[in-house]
Length: 443
Image (cartoon, rainbow, N blue to C red; front, side, top):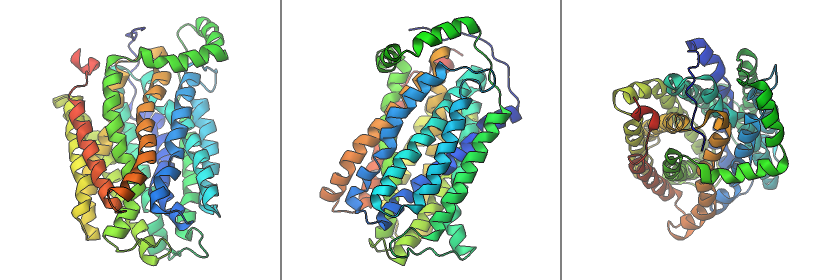
């Protein structure tokens, strides 16, 4: 496999890092609304708890299909004005904003599931090239800082988005109760704001950031014509597994168990808190909807912690190593997630969310920083997209198995599914010890 070319890239200022990462504020605004409210929307429209994981399969399946393709296409794209990655930011933002507007207006369960497919695909079109954007523009010495800046905006966007339903209910007096089986107004208005923020944030990055053209444009255009033929593209996309660097293979196992935990948390925290703390499983009840708002606060806390930790973790990484930081953070997050089982007072649920937030900051930063140093520069987008397989495959398996396990092994108590997720995250932390960080080892 081609080795990464050692080219010194210009060091970017704080505000250049800010502008190139700001789009993630909107992207995570959309993801946070999806993560905190999709199960609530499905349940309000009549979904049973056992079926939630299956309905959520839309998210990982679209990621599995979209991200490697978008990564490959963006590697082989160049326009004098739009650049390489920014065309995908632009198109994905428009489509995702439309889907965010449609989601809370779904009048039937099948419609909400269909919109989730559209929404997740569109968000992935915008999101995937952002990871490669850091590898394109930043020298190795700045890549951890670049991913940390993305993590900061991910945390900030997610905090605000997660708290919106509660803000509409408690501050502005908007109804938080479903009427005639429809989604509450608090959720609808939150998604409307999310659509606008997503579009405006991504457009900020599109129009304030630039991209350098390929070193040899004539050669790039010749290779692009060949690469964009269907047969070559299909062979390259499918053949990448055999060309994965050793570091990427090792990180794949870490990602696998990490994302089982995260998928379980996003799907089942709402029903777990409603059952374990609020004492209800009736999605039409006021108590259930109150639990949904409290879950938004919990998710806001873990994302807020991740935004703060994003700038602290790189300091610890320089003092120790990225592997040590990631191992420690995942174990803290896993123990925290599992501990929710023992908590029956809603205010105390904030404590484990601090630990989850520390883990989330590392999950969004360290694996990508480690991976970027092991990838060939001209295939950065493709391999970052391929890496997403190890994010979505565990989610697909979870979608197929967690519902059955919850029903038959945990007697329908989804809080026990969260315990399983915590154990999985701890295992991911242990596996991080065996990862080779080439860039840091070379120092």
